[in-house]
Length: 374
Image (cartoon, rainbow, N blue to C red; front, side, top):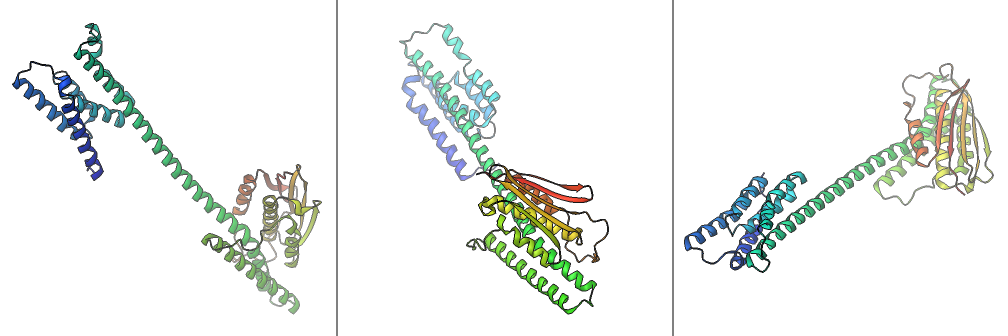
């Protein structure tokens, strides 16, 4: 792996530190009486050890072992040994670091067995050396653990960001389905009726055309609002639906020709929390849309009941379709792959509620319970 300029800067800095350590400790670690030739070999060994630090990234363990062995014969290798030990502690697994530490402290029992005298300079130098070795390994382990912590936090942040983006995509898809499916199903039903019955009375044709126009207009407004939210240039748009808007929702379905009976059994629907009311509205909207697509001639009963602390119950019930709709499906109808119910289940779960749907005898029932805290 090629070194970056930052890597070269770090390697050169550590080389200078190791060399400087050897120079600064010259008087305290080199015994008196060494011949010039022995001293030269000792200094040359120290210089080669410092130069070998440029290999620490490729062979950190091997280099450290060689330097530890050389340190038993040379007084100028200590600085390079400390740098190599730090590299192993930061870049290799803890087990490898432990084995290298055992090798580094191998002379310590021998040193203690000799019964060193504390007032001797050599004893002080040896104790200082082992203390530096222990401190260097401990510092390296700390740096390693900190790097791993930073790496894990970065990965966690990336996962959280990806999860947030995924959740945002799901929210957008769910909102677009909930908002547009109702409008488009109205448009599809009436357009199909006009195509199926071209000789309908003029008043009925005019009414169907009006519903188509209004549904298309509302769908465009809803789409414009969603796009505005995605672009971030929306100031909130139109007010979000609440529980009190269920009567208007039922009227829209009746105007489209559906037979809808609303049983509003909540004393003060305007007191329902905004999130609970909006979720109840979307559930009722999806139930009416599904009934209109799959059983257009069936009567639909929409029942809403509940109170603070008891929760809110929304139920949409209609006779399950046993025959194809009166308007033939030639592929132009709004497709339904069950995504609406999947979105409702997710929306209900997010507010802490429960959703169930399926046949109950001859009827199809969509029922949800939502929490309503006082």
